[in-house]
Length: 471
Ligand SMILES: *Cc1c(COP(=O)(O)O)cnc(C)c1O
Image 1 (tube, rainbow, N blue to C red):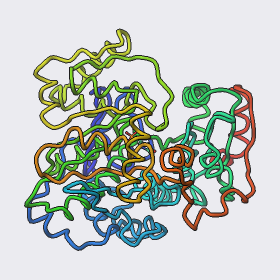
Image 2: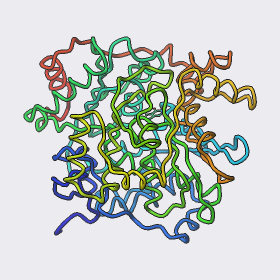
Image 3: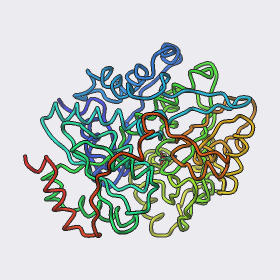
Image 4: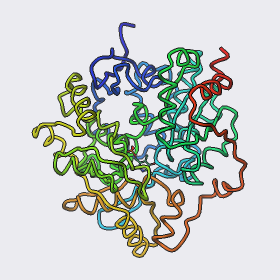
């Protein structure tokens, strides 16, 4: 073969194009950039209309196949997608619920860990195994989590033949539900490490492992964080699934997305680039409102992170924003690298007015503090009897603030209310119940080792347990 069948390029322009399987396994490009498709697949109106009536897994296979052209897993994709979503606890997988005139909630919490991250990661776990089996390789996934990524990453990798996963969390600093979703997984290829320290300490340890080239090669280190392109690809599916139900391709839909790292809403952008009629993409933020300040005033300025009731959005620098920046700067990798460097050094993103206007033609943003979040959760409960989680409340309030006219707006409900029981109880006076498949979560035995922040000890632990190290 002369080159990858469906090439991906780096947002910083300093890494060679790569095929799907390589970027699936490696995540970040060697030049520090993020991979994006060289060109987007094209969906015409007939393509979209032809997808109406497909099952969620069937739609996932149709949408992902062109992105995976040349992959060792593409021939088995329909079966892999079928298995990925078979365990979800709603037959619609991502049911769309009308809330009030033209506003819909898309429930993205029917996967094993009750957050939207399962929708891409369950598929990614199956793709990893298929590609690794074809190559006769194993990988060792290492990650750090402050909450939702850890459980979803572990659920994606648990029991997989060719993967071992080591997940670091700050001891005593995740919620009990989140910790138990990691530590009660019984599979022998799952290793939980509670670090005496903060989330940043966990991230430092992960970075130290990735900086150790000998270790990297020996255990084939890999990552499941949101910069992996395959996660964006897997998330494009539910945008199409929802839009088809509210009138696409004849009628555009807008989306409101509770946003942290910008990976979820970037998938909405990807759907639009392929041809889905999308009105607006509304970015919801909590008190950490850097993205709102950007979309409103072209003022992306780093401030400190404030802890809120919606912890998965307590982020200042949204890593996936770089993918949008790449397009805003006419896909000039050198310009992206220089702009990101200036942002990191000076704390403010330098972007000229014309590029910013291009972003605001599609995107809008609104933010909501904790008090507003509680009020929104309470108002929805009083009007409809429905409990929503704090992240979803932020998205819903943003939708109300930014919507225009009668165009349908789909609010992505990114977590199940029972994932954040304290906030939901405070707002509604009723403690939400875990779904049946997790009802005994608090009785299940936990497995976890506790460690000081010590790179050498962690390295020894990984080498002693990763099957890839044994060759
Ligand atoms: C991860 C997460 C988010 C943020 O998603 P991004 O893709 O990082 O923008 C929002 N809500 C919940 C519940 C999450 O777990």
